[in-house]
Amino acid sequence: MDDIRSVLARHGFSFKKKFGQNFLTDTNLLSAIVRDAGVTEETTVLEIGAGAGALTRALSAAAKRVVAYEIDASLRPVLAETLAGCENCEVVFGDILRADLPALEAELGRYRVVANLPYYVTTPVVMLFLEQAQGCEGLTVMVQEEVADRFCAQAGTPAYGAVTAAIALKGRAQVTRRVPRTMFTPRPNVDSAVVRIDFERGRLPVQSEAAYRAAVRCAFLSRRKTLANNLIAAFRVSRERAEELLAEAGVGAMARGETLPPEALARLADAIAAHGLA
Image (tube, rainbow, N blue to C red; front, side, top):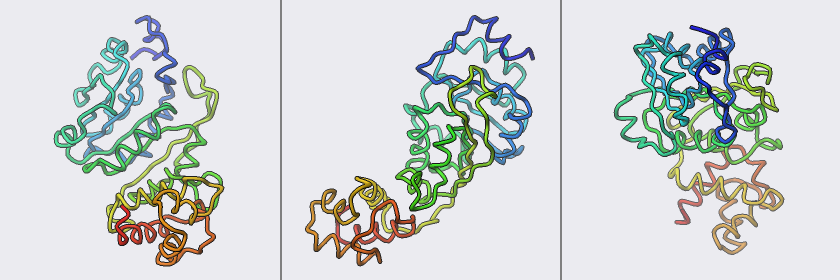
């Protein structure tokens, strides 16, 4: 296969800023990402953002099957060339955020997500699989370095936030490698990192996932306010009741949401559910 840049030029492809297109071309890095994702000959992969197909081809060489979503239909002739001979690979031109996920999962069975995600869809895509997926075993995603640190942050640190707590309900996140901006075409303004999230069903046992999500939203409603004040604002309860909820969760009345580890948020979620607030 010709160099990706040559293929793109031959097909007159123009990068589109609205899609956040920054393609990887280094074969060693692509192979490393496939290894990071734990892809084997038994793995079905759902790739999000096929781009010019470099990572897709590397996944195809290692996986049992690859279904790759790509939002930019102008890449059709590029992918037809770069994925020639990849018999276990199917490209779907469409937006994964608009896909019928239950129908897709019924067709895929058990699968892992691998993606080089532009910033504007990173959180929505990760939350889609955290909250709605049933057959997904985990995600390995290339994201901006700052976002990667947020996914893996510890409670009480500036990077810790709602998405960190949301990930912790379903799985464990770890940065597997840092990727400098020089590895992309075109070169972005920031460095990136690869994050692997392995799903562990029942990792944080809660009475209600909806209540946990409500607890997380409440905790980060206003970082400058105490959690008691956020509970009052979010659930329209009295201070006395707010402090009762915190006491049931074993949380101090003056605590702030960003200091609570996911385990404490799970206890708060159970108190919220027990009081019929979510």
